[in-house]
Image 1 (cartoon, rainbow, N blue to C red):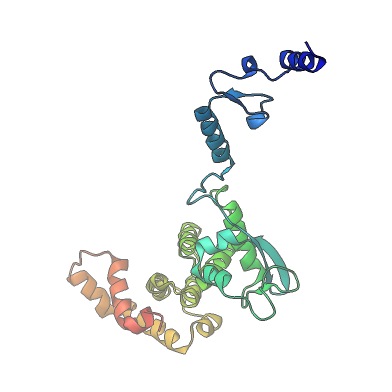
Image 2 (spheres, helix red, strand yellow):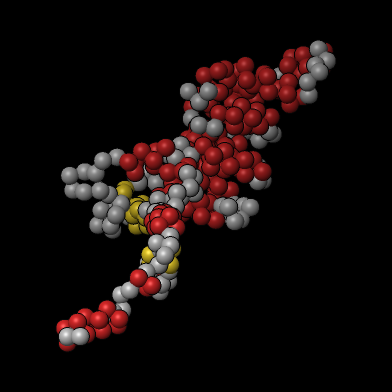
Length: 273
């Protein structure tokens, strides 16, 4: 045998690549895939593993209601800066919702920095504080405020920015607190469009023993002062009292007098006009 033939025979015998080293089933090795150092899988299993791997890489779906894309905005209220979440404000008010989607000015968007805040005109610091306290603490505390003044501040800003749910809550709480003075209720009713407060307050002033004083007359205005004076005379007139007794009204005394006062004031005054 020649040296060349011996070398060829030896190479064939000692070669690490032989038929016996190949997998008879056609399996392939996937080193490192899915965190394993060596995985032996069939072609079908390999495709499934790869598909599963890339499926896990895709982002999960976002919840339609509770995936919040919230931002903080800077507001300037009566010379004081506030930085709060937009979510609560735009949830309660279409006014704020429209404000946040308005296109930016030529100088850039407002509310991102202290240098260019969103200005809230005709809002006091106390009113904005009341609103934020209600929004942030209202869900934790059954009643975040303990005084009528705090609920009045909340009523004021809720009315200005059309926050109907918060406005209704403020009105409810004010009705549950110790009664407000009729003069104060009339002033609040006119300012915040609470028409249902007007007639009961007029009746209370007509039925009470004390007449209007000077400060109350100034607060009410000339026309309302005159109508109150007419109402006070009418409910005390002997003829009115005799009508109540003679007709034997099914209504109580206060309900009967309420109808008398309502007729004196008419629809215009009771509508806040």
